[in-house]
Length: 426
Image (cartoon, rainbow, N blue to C red):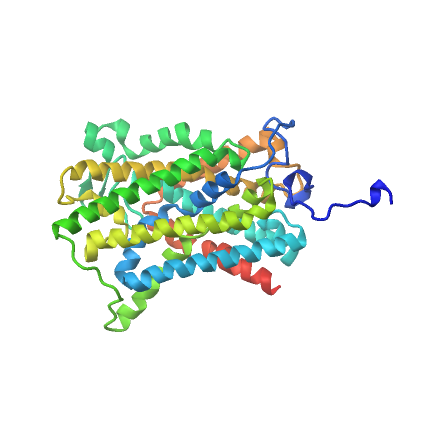
């Protein structure tokens, strides 16, 4: 027996030994720093990966979930949230299983293996449509207080149906040109979005992702606290447990909750990027399940206590309910805390959704070029171009419902469920 005949009993699936090429390559090659040289990066941690995937999941959809309880009732609504979590876990498992079998290291690479060049291009176009739409929605929400309806703003204030809704900044400092919608978005884009979008490795966003999840928990804790206080005081009514179906119209209304539930768990476009940076790729399944368990818990508690607090008065965007008197001491302060924490949460979600958008745009325009992280010029041009498109969309699209409805009904469902099923059948 020679040394060459000796092989390890079990191969450790470490990213240190993975070689990648052409369009299947992850955005950042292993152990290369942002200048194209080599660094000491030995792989992302389990905790960082969980936070990044959780932040990908928990976006704007969390504010629409209490309204699904109003339509479905608590029992069916919570059951659907749990069901969608298991369905998402199954679809991601399909992606990972066949990626391992075909040695694909990206969602686009997997679609290319299954359906050829046009399959990969179709996937990349769907990521562009979905993520640009989602990021436009995030920008509008930061200036506007509505997720499903154009009802008011978080920071700058606006008018809807002839009624002016003062934003947080306007309420604190009065109405000025520098706390208007456009100026707030310019400052936010240049001061927050652009710097965070310049990271070339997704693991670099783990701390902002952790803070983003923490801000979502802050909203949850405030909602739970208010609900408990009002429950003790006896001012909260028993919420409806089952859907109120009285005619055909109310029956069809049940299906209006499907887009909200589907988009609430869309994170598939970031799974491969997170997997590529894990030191031990066998951790990706526990990462996915831990993130889904964390997000499902936040979703269920937000839905339950949000509906418990506001009952049948729950708006399609529960954040709009926090623009009224809550009937407890320090109501105005709590309203502002909820709205500011949610706006800050979305600001930190932005870069984690922008990351795969830039990756797929580069793959669509330059499928055979060297990795994007090794070309600073290409990286800067694509980043600046996409941010400019998103900024213009946020300023010229009048309502987030236009963007949300289109992306949720088309690209999101393809990325989350149709493509994984198609790959499996293929």
